[in-house]
Length: 334
Image (cartoon, rainbow, N blue to C red; front, side, top):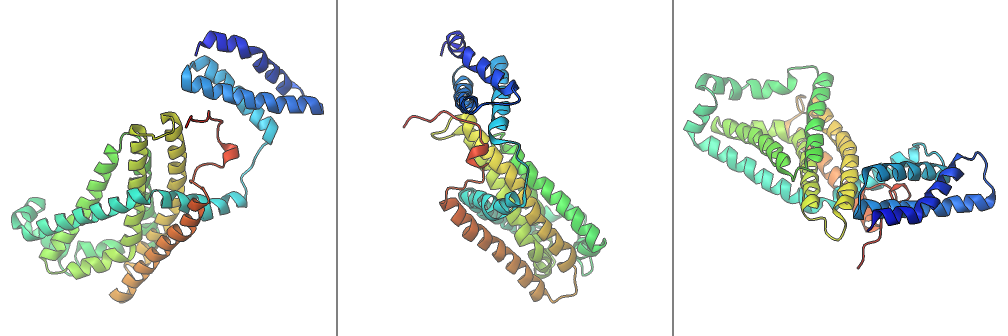
């Protein structure tokens, strides 16, 4: 594209659109003209961004298109309809669409944690490199630090602390995925290493059942949320490498917007797991009862994703913004 020729050919339309936007009142004919010029300018902006990006011109047209969109559609405020749509369609659809990434991530990560646990549990020299024998005993004995950890603080403050830490980890997986997924793999490894150390140390002390009884009530949903975040982050990173039929900029924008929406949804999921960890895990309920609660919460979340999310995904909901709220794009040739 010859940018100078393109600007010369369309400058009059942009100036006319700017002049219409400055008027306080428009006739019916002028309003129709404004809509037509808005659509044309949005297409011009998309062409320039994809073919001959010029920062100054792109900035001017972006502001012009934003003003025109506001004039055409009016100011939009958030409503309960947006909340309902997000919870029943956008978020579960985004999680469902990412299932081919987070399910393998979950399986591979769980296998890694189990392998690390077996290695630590069956190799005394590895355990001795982690801590001194007295320290290991303080961790794993009845009433030791692994058990008292969940009841060492008031339930409400402990739940808030756990939720904050886990939400931060999930957000980091989603945001850092754009760096080709490498930071996501490191965050996953750190989480699985911590879990594997707990499995290995407690199994070596003959108390693996106690450890699982403490971890499973909240850990099933908590780890699922982390796996979803990690899988989505890896998918975001892959969209940089292989955007498919979409332009790389468009693919990254679409997947990035969906990922940011998922950060909000996963924060809610982690809030639930934090409540379970703060109030159920350290409770006096029987172990089987606490594990049953954890399994039930996990199954409810999976049903939510596969039923509501599957239905929304089949209806072409991707978790991105609604079509009317997205920037105009140039159609890709078949």
